[in-house]
Image 1 (cartoon, helix red, strand yellow):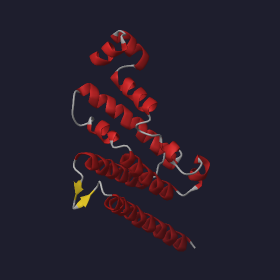
Image 2 (cartoon, one colour; image 1 turned 45 degrees about the horizontal axis):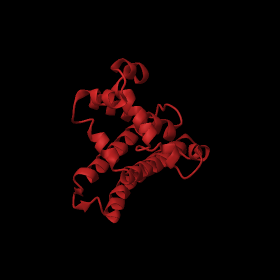
Image 3 (cartoon, one colour; image 1 turned 180 degrees about the vertical axis):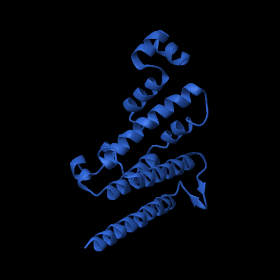
Amino acid sequence: MNALIKEAGVGKKQIYDYFGGLGGVADAWVRRTGIWPRLSDMLDEPLETFHQRPPMERLRMLVRTYASSLRAHPAVATIMAGEFAGPPELRDAVTAVRIRIWEEYERLFIGQRSEDKELLAIAMTMLSAVSYVGMRAKFEPNFFGFDLHDDLAWERVVGMLDHVMGRYQTGVDAATSHQSDSAD
C-alpha cells in the first residue's frame, strides 16, 4: 500500500476513501487491465443464447472458457498464487478479486442463485481443478507426465475434466429419465 501511495502521490486516506483498501485497488486494477478477462467477453455467443442452454452444458462451456483464459493469461496464475503467499493485505486483495470472479461465473452458468447443490458441487470442483492446473502450468508445468506448456497435453487434461462433467451429465440425465419412467 505504501508503494502505491508513493507512486500515486496521494495520501493513504484518499486510497482508502476511493477504493476501500488494497482489495478495492486490486479489483480496480484487474478490471482496468483486463488481465482477468470477464467471462461474458470470452463467450462465443450472446448471453441470451448461453442462458437458454441446459445448466450442465453451460458449466461445461464455462470450464473450457476458464481453462482457455488461464492458458492465454498466465499472469493470472501469479495473481491467484498471491492468495496463498505474501502479506495478509495481498492475500485479502486476491481473495476479494477471486470471490467477485466466482460470483460472475456463478451468475453466468446458472443465471441466478441455484438451489441445485450437486450442480454447485461439480462447478466448484471443476473450477478448482482448472485453477490448480492453470497455476501448475505457470509454476511447475509437469503434471502427471503432461507438459502443460504443450498444447496437446493441455487439451488432453482439459478434455479429462470435460469427460468427468460429461459422465456426471449422463448420470443426471439417466436419473431424470428413470424418475420420469417411474412416475408414468
